[in-house]
Length: 551
Image (cartoon, rainbow, N blue to C red; front, side, top):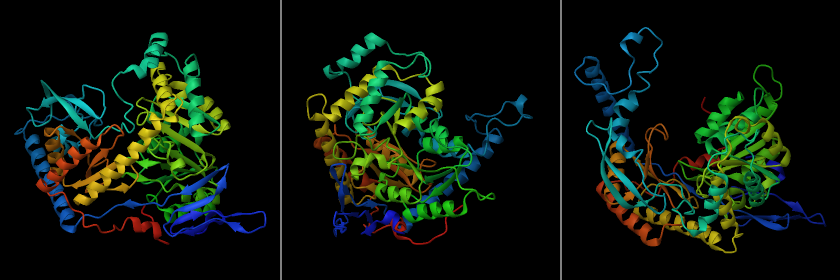
């Protein structure tokens, strides 16, 4: 990669040199890839190396995976033929006979996958929970009498299931205890609903208190909070960019970022995940050639990335993205939904994780649904940015304000993490989460599973590949009182179905050992230990110098 901003590249990491008073450059580049930057704003910065794993599956696993989908597709066409002939009942949504001449409301071919493949294993999703999503929870048992088209409850509750699926990273989503008294008091004083938007009569003192606390937590000038995390992205990106602007989006970005980008009307171009050469090629072309046909300069260039990618467990290579952003005078928007509260020495996200200055990121976005045990999201950064969004944000204009008890829960959780409650328990939980993450990942690697992502990420995908094994894996573990989330197409590539574990600070070593013991048995039973500890071709993209992007 070209040297962005006059820095030096050491072992794949950017190190920015600054000059001393005598004119000599300062800075260190150490052999292990960790780069220490000169002190800024009174504190040293430490750039961590990107240590991630994306191991490829053996060839025979991929062959059997595609063969399984191929057989499922063939039987799906056979069953659709039987349904059209009236030999098999069709439970899917179809057009009424009197509407046969209308434009179809239900696209028959588009629903093929749902109708014939997803329905076979549908019982592994949307499981109803009847307790707080703590380290253990209770699951309502249900069965199907028509091959998963409908379900009925048996009345039995599966008690004390170990929760490995909820993104309750710090264990703050829990049942009521005395520490939540302030939330109860706010509920009694303010009620549940606000019944107005922020622009009208929906701005409460609790909202302003929360926004000031978020700004302090992130060490930025100002922040604005919203009642829904998904809408924080999808409704605010259109307020920041529009026609004549360019969005450069990571290929693995969340659906909320994708929707926000599409709603904005801006031109969207995709770069390879965490690939600086791919991103720089797009930036360079955007600066050189400008807008298509007219060749005018883009009004704005906005880079969209996430802190932790929720399906890959990957952490953004933020130092190099910041360097590219500065070199090409672009704007940077980072979604810290999964990373805020869960990474960094004090839980302040990937900006702190890499030791960067928050001012290097133009738009800091995050949600309160993961580490804070609540709901909603925030946008933070410079005061003029936040003031602009207060006027132009679709969420501020049209959406109901955040519920007061929810705001108080976030305030309570954030003070807990910051130590403003007079204890160090919040910091201890951040450290415990990091310890649990490293332990769980290391043990899975030793067992021979293929797992994706960064070694510091509490989101841990375990690759299952074959659709039949996806269903068997989740069903067997639930029978052993372990709740997991399994994910497949279209949320992942077709041949990369996986289980996604979310480690929590609330998990004890005994719980993790119980889960690992059962996973070891499942790996042998279902033959899931595919790892050969060989490096994938995907991380090698970081070192590519030239390639053609896919359309």
